[in-house]
Image 1 (cartoon, rainbow, N blue to C red):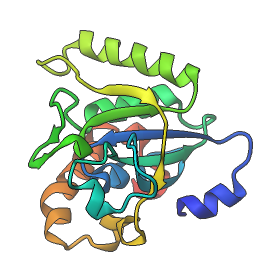
Image 2: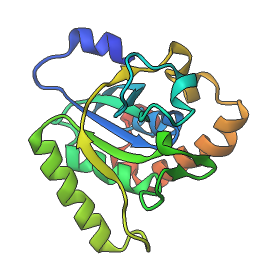
Image 3: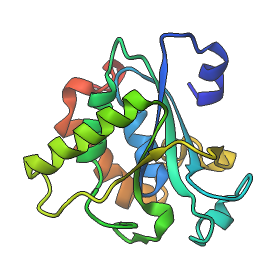
Length: 192
């Protein structure tokens, strides 16, 4: 189900989270497979111009990060569990970079929707940093959600629609497989 369909039917029990972790195609593909996530949308957040296009964002001059906005059912998955997936499925220690994708638009970021999410994100980052999951310090930005815009339609559901595309098979598919291996308890039942 896509974000717009879910948003129209969204009830008071669902919550939202917005994460930047490099290319949004990668992040979208992982969270689409997480149990309790009912919708994922690729977009941009954290910038300073109105209604940015992908071609503007990739210049790195708009202040926007590629992000995913997800809707989830907290009765099935917690914000803490979503963050655990976040910390394990990208490198939060590289400033403005994920693999070959370089620039502020690929920064690691948690754009919180509430003060509670901010507190949980800060505690989760400290816990993860202290755990030595990563040998270098985490540099993830934790900021309030501002200026979110949905990305163009061809970016939505990208991996599922283009599994044979080069970037999908070389970069995204291994990340999805790693997620499935590391988080079988969070995998949607239909994807086991």
